[in-house]
Image (cartoon, rainbow, N blue to C red; front, side):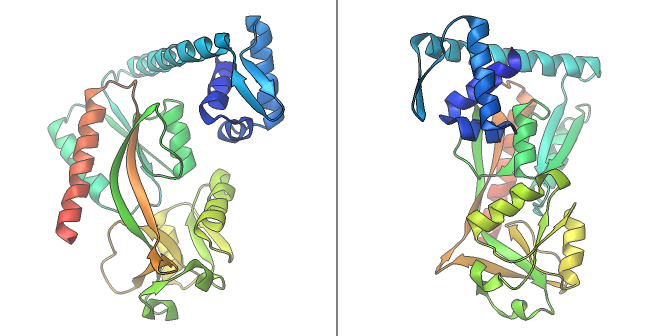
Length: 298
């Protein structure tokens, strides 16, 4: 029943069967069937279906609100049990954006570890969707991620910085001679993305449909490999904020949409039900590092 319960919560939270299906990596018909099966198991209707829309029944509204508490408690129980099983009752598990190149995360981690040398820290890497899934399923306590969707009431959404988007190119490339460029002007150049095998299609869709890159896409598993391709003049890599590499082999060009810069928000996300003091402390250290960088660059 728990899986069906999560599907039901996704449909209600997103107010859409299709978006809930996408979030849970199943078909729309499958998620609809799962909710119908949940209704049969419960013995009452949760949703009142009206053509292509739906509304919660009074019983469904009550069940939804109570189910949020139930699943939050269950996830917290599983997480704590897993930590106890590992002999790690007070650790910190962090999700880190695979393609982010800033030093703020490393400095915050260094400061946290210096203050708490006995607290074990685990770091998981992923792209946007992978990190969101890790946080949703309790694999990590907190993530540093970019914002691509509306903020959810289930999480603390701490905005760390809003920064300009750039592309990195070889310093020997003709593109390095311009100060700013728009996505349509890059259609003849391959776009290099850092993405795992399972997330390549999602990353391509985002950079094609949202950012506007229309050329060929190349994929690598890590940031270092991506920059090697950049240096070899195989294409350009989109980056947002972060620290510029020292040396002259790579140049950055500001990415624009018309006359306006393309901006990206970076945030720390964690579940409101996670009451670990380590999570809040690390988030505070991370925020301080981003604020320090802003003051330095102003």
